[in-house]
Every structure is written in C-alpha cells, then in structure tokens.
Length: 295
Image (cartoon, rainbow, N blue to C red; front, side):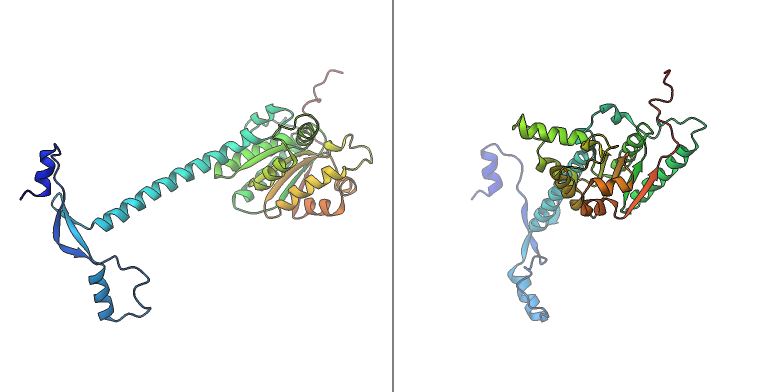
C-alpha cells in the first residue's frame, strides 16, 4: 500500500510531507479546563486530553500547534508595526495636509530661518522663552501658550517652528488661522454645501490633534481697536474647540490684551482660554514687515 508521499509523487509533487514523531507537546491546555488550584492528577489528565503530536520537519521535532501560534503572532506583530508606521506617517503629515493658512509661506518657518537683528533684545529674550516652552512640551507638560503683540513681530513664525519640532515626536499638529477657518466655514454654509469645511469638520480637527495653534485670535471679529465682540456663532465654535482640548496644549497668537479677550468673548470661553496659560508679550519689538519701509 502506497503512503501519502508516494501518492504525491505520482501526481507530480515531489516534496515530502512531514512525518509524525513519536513525542507529544503538552502546552495547549485551554485556560477554562483546569480549576484555580488543580491537582497533579487533573493536570496530567488535561495534558493527555489536549496533547498535540509532534512532527518531523527537516529532522527536527516540531509541534504544529506551536508553529501555527508562532506564525500567527509574527503576522500580527508585522501588521501592528505596519499600522504603527502608517499612523505615525499620517500624524506627521497632518501639519501640511490639514493646516489652514491665509499665507501659506508660513509653512516655511523654522527656528533656523528666524533671523533677528543684534539690537532686537526683547525678541531674543522671547525666543529663549519659546524654546523653553518647547522643551517642556517635549517632556509631556501641558499648558496653553500665548504669543501676544503687534502684527509682524514673528508670533506666527515661532509658533509654526514649535509645531515642526513637536511633530518629530510622533504627535499630530495643526496650524489654524482663525479668521480663515471662519471664512471657509461660512463659504461652506452659504455658497458651497459640498465643501468639507463645515463647523463639525473644524471642531473635530482642532480637538483631535495633540498640538494646535489658533493663529491671530481676534482678527475674526474685524478691527480689534473697536469694542466689537465675537458673534454667538464664532464664540460657540471656539468654545467647542477649547472645551475639547482641556487636557491638551494649545498655542494662541493674538494682538489682543487679556482685558480685550475677556471683553470680546463670553466669560466661560475667555476663562478656558486663559486657564493654565503662559504669556509671552512683545512690547518693544518692531514689525519685521515694516521696519525697513522707505515711507
């Protein structure tokens, strides 16, 4: 009588099948079988019942069940690693793909190209404060950072530089120009209902990322030198974002003073934005956009 290997050879399959060995593997007792404190007899009976016969593979005795479990674990680990790399890649690209700018050249901002004149003492001191805040963020500390001052002193440049450093830690980061966010939102509401830039889209985006910049807060209300306050709708959106980030760090840039913020937004929103906050206030630094103007 032909054995299985002989039968396979007849149909053109020359590789021999593994042969059964005489030994058994006793490592596959299901967890539910034994009581909490089993006796030796109970263990021995379970081992006999759930034993798995070994096989000879290239001269070695192998438990097919162990081999199957090991291969399953290897494939699961590979899939987990692929998912991890994909997730890290997605987080890294969030800054470029989902940030909202009025001036997209801000994406070029880095600490390396933040150039200061020798006489810009205040800006140099504040740069060190920003770098200190960055180091604390890297250490896992959570706080809101406010960069406050007139237009053109480098607030947006520095905040973007911080995000670029933080995203190397496998964190998700987004830069949102507040005025541009609301412009896109209103466009989706009134002119293009197919647009993805809805209220819900921005709230989800701003609350899910690890680090967020809300750039130029206050510009969405118009001229900040008036007593005009934020509309109920804008306050509602900002409140949803800030409430959703209570255990995360947010960087704000603004031309507003804390007094103006409290006046412009409702009390709860202002309180949440200013809670657990640090401020870097530019008073003497000149706008790099206008300091060389000829008239």
